[in-house]
Amino acid sequence: MTFEVCVDWDATNWADEPDFSEFYDNISDDVDTGGVVGLSWERGKQKEEGNAPAATLTVNLRKGLCQKYSPFTTDADLTGKIRPWLPIRVRAYHLGGYIAEYFGFIERMSFDPSLGAQSVSFYCTDGTDLLARQLITQDPTSKEICSDGQAMHKILDAAGWSRDRRSIDMDGGDDLLAYPTSSSY
Image 1 (spheres, rainbow, N blue to C red):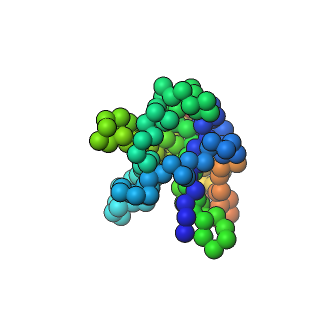
Image 2 (cartoon, one colour):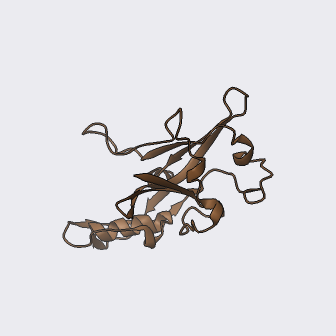
Image 3 (tube, rainbow, N blue to C red):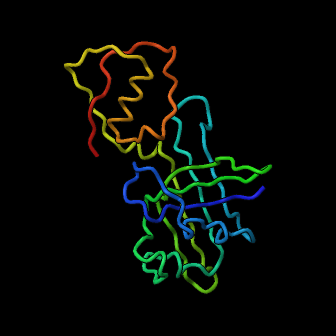
């Protein structure tokens, strides 16, 4: 099994559909496969009670790539593009096809240019974190009843989450009263 790691370096809005088609978007060859773990992710609840945390991903790059992935890079393809909140995708290639492993956003980057380290790491979070940062309000005058699936669509619409990135079961469920209708950030 091999992994493909892609960053949409040209993205300008987190809510837009990412495009990983540029040749420089695929950074798989730059992921460390030697001394440190190149990719690690966590997702899901650690215990039954409490909130479900955002899924996280850490990408450690091979030594010596600080200059290429620095926000001050002079690399022709990446100049002015190294910044947080870019979409990142990890897929596994297995048995002749790709399997989605992780989709999220680069939350922050770490650079250690010292001669002994020469390391670059990307710390990523998924859309749960971005949705948690949205302030969704409820219209107190609206008393319209809708299904829980419709309510989820209203929440995601208010947060600016693309309909292309949703898969919500609209069948069954309960009816809810007065769903969110607006947001601010």
